Length: 469
Image (cartoon, rainbow, N blue to C red; front, side):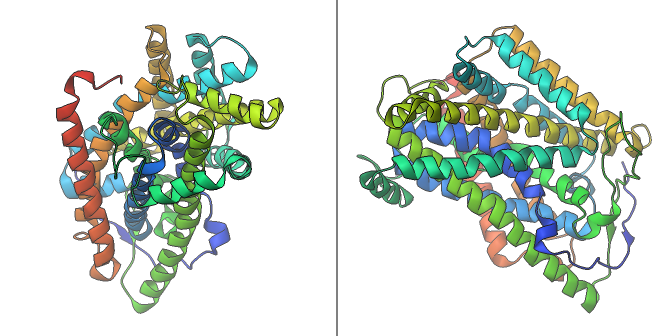
């Protein structure tokens, strides 16, 4: 397809950091229930804290990749998907629909939520609990007015309650020796190993790297959210309104850019500094601290305990340990909060995936799939995912960790591909004063090599046992 050239307008005046806060809550919330709450604590419960260095590297890579995603949309007012199609051709939107829906059709996170919430409520976990939670997700999206606002509100609420509690309970239970082990883990020193233990399942480790933050194509959704928040030239793009409520907004597929005049460059630099601060505070620092604290909590409470070797059961064991060392109600609250955080993650995953898939459907053929119908496409893909998740449960795949690992490995491969594409896009299409610095190019290229190397190695080594541990 041929995309129209970008219109040109003056770069908008910068907003305050307070008014910019929002999009990073969604992408942080997407990561909380996968890498932060499941995979890194699971690995720490089984192998100790000597691997925590990799979690810090993983979320750091994602911070720099996310900022390059934001850079393109800040400058052009259009999604990163439109930009990548401009650069690499008409097959790109097909690739993104496939690599968004297939890895996430396995409802591992909602299965984890169902398992944990069932335990908190004292009922038996069955597939029907997971199916019910999937239906609740669809209902919540149908009740909201502006889709972006619905996601932002849900994730802000969960994070502002969950993160302080995790901080409190971890500092309450962690002892001096535990903190020393954590500090050693930052430099890769574990119990009898450096960097990686020999028995570490590489598929699970790659999954944890991919989910040290959001993971997979979910990082690319940051482009859509900053556009709908009105960052930079995204001010002129429009938002998705619930098809059942409200007046439609004029949504634009092709963006708007600006002349590189001194005044516009000055405004761009102020915007760029402030959105880096917003993403660093909410996503990078808060995400890293939460991941480290949850891993420390898992190590402190259940490291080496029987029953933590498989599945999401280690979270249930954590709750029992917390209850035993404090009082029962605190353990139940931890379990309930973990279940809600996992639910919130699946909620935002489906919302982000629906937004990505709908956008790329329009890019495939804007004449056939009108941009004005984007809200309809959002809900179409939302319910497709929900029905696929129900189908997976119905045929008997209910083991949470295996589903999470399988999806995450596929997402890591996707991250390898698009990190290189984004770097190429921003260093060629954007005008020179707006391109990434040498430092950012080095970091994103390192992520490209890192994800690619681990993906290839993991596939070769684990070809016969790629789905379950």
